[in-house]
Image 1 (cartoon, helix red, strand yellow):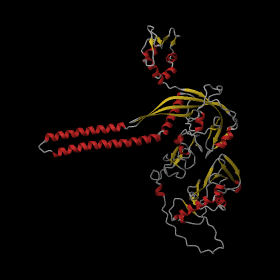
Image 2 (image 1 turned 90 degrees about the horizontal axis):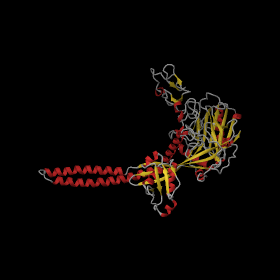
Image 3 (image 1 turned 30 degrees about the horizontal axis):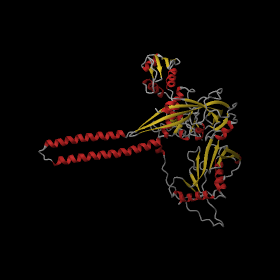
Image 4 (image 1 turned 90 degrees about the vertical axis):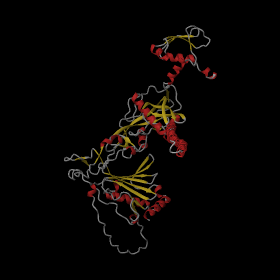
Length: 612
């Protein structure tokens, strides 16, 4: 230890402070000697008598005194015990203002859901409480042919249960104080899925497991690079050693082959040497493989608990099948709402779905949707999804029709076919009719050439052969009549991207059809999800008109949809969406992004390539 470091380190304070924390009795020094009475269990750990006279001065010659230095075994034992305990700490974020109002309205403008709506909870108001962050400091050891170590910190949002990756939040959390200015506020309960009680062992263990999983995900790229490097060096060393022993074995075999047949003893000696050489080669090769094995060790060094007050209010998220309550949390440190969290993967996200089981989930965290009622379930509620015994498509428990004869479950379309083949479900492939090709109609008489050639809209089905894509002319999109009549159409027009969604509503909470118009580099792509088993409007691409006529082209497509479901024009409402701002109108006005001539020209060129 250097003299400068020794001056800053007070050995007596270190040792006596530790002993006092371990419930020892320490008397003030008398002539440089401290009398200490240790608990029996602590004395047994140190293998010394409970009563001790301790001196920290080298010149002290008092009898029956234990002179301690930095290298004394007792001091080293104390240091090892302290190193084995995480040196956790606590801090407080006080420089915030909690006077925020209107959180429910702000949440309604900020959070969007593809299948739900956020509303203010009746009789609710803004509340204030103490929230927490947990900073886990890990030491990662990479052990292979050479040992590497690094320190990594991860911050977990205690109440939300996810890793904080926002650089602005992490930067603000670097400055904290030792005392709290909001000790009178209540502590917020954890609100993530399957969370336990506040600061319970189960909750802390779950947060630690989440931090370790995020840490492993973060070092995955580095591990891949290390594994590739080790594999490269392993192959080089294996090839070098194999070549060395192969050369030696080849030399011995040549010497053996040159011996006479009568010299059996010398031939046997060389054969024994070859066997020993092969065994030695196997040992060397195994040593190389063991030397380049990668071992990774994660060790939690300590934890920092940060406390910060926040403002929150309950909000209601609902659709036709579920209603849940979540909290809109205002973070006064960065002046914005905290994102909502997926109940399946525990990560924050936008555009979360509300499943019928009452969970919020990303699209990739959803279970397959029901083909009958279109209910949405997440992976937590995967047990609610079964399958049809005939078509093996997903059907929820609510829509599954159980047969009284065979007790199998089917979807609505295949009801009664579950035991139609001698008590077994029927094979749908045997029911598929082979359609004879329709005769080509006679060409119509050539019309008289008009003074101005009319413009014809061109379309092509996606995924067909090039010969089938050469069809021209217009086609009615109505196809088979829908089974249910619509009462209203809601049209969402996105002002920042060339996308339009039209929802045909049976009631205020039931959607009959969703038709999407998307301007792509290959043309206007139209997709439709509706109650018809085969919708002839689904998955077609149309050649876009120019910027002066694109309004009429889209309006005609929406008119076809309106007439298909027999919805009067006054029952069509347009919602123009720009970020979190939504405005309502009764007429269609295409945004400027639909009228960019270079984009339309690119789409027309892409469509023409499809039809060539």
